[in-house]
Image 1 (tube, rainbow, N blue to C red):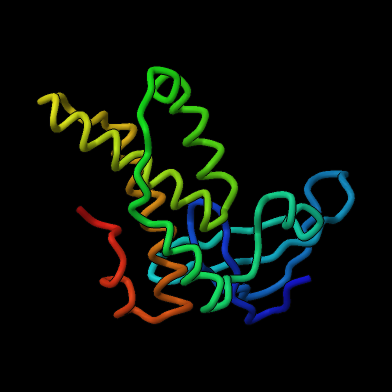
Image 2: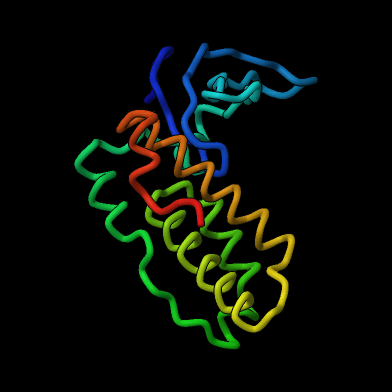
Length: 160
């Protein structure tokens, strides 16, 4: 599916480059093939089983047109309910693990809405929610920088 030198997007981590394909045999198990991916602007490198790459959310970066279309959804208002707050952990985990721009934007919009609500109530925004917001924002930034260029990041309301 992917070739060496292809740029790919992996959930949570963002855009990386396939630097090589490897084969590994662990113990008596059958040899498995992996993509070795080096992430842009990060020392992180991971191996992804080739057979599970799609299932794990590995994909090509969006086109400029598709990314701009998705980014129009930034700053959509999100209604916060008790159910939203109760299911936040599950919702955030699902959105971070999907690896899609659409889900990252949904999560960012929700977490920013919660942060603003907490601020109005003079309450603290939780550390775990803050961490998830940072992960989703960095994930989205990596794709914007790769597809639209580093200067494009400032055109979108990622930071408040």
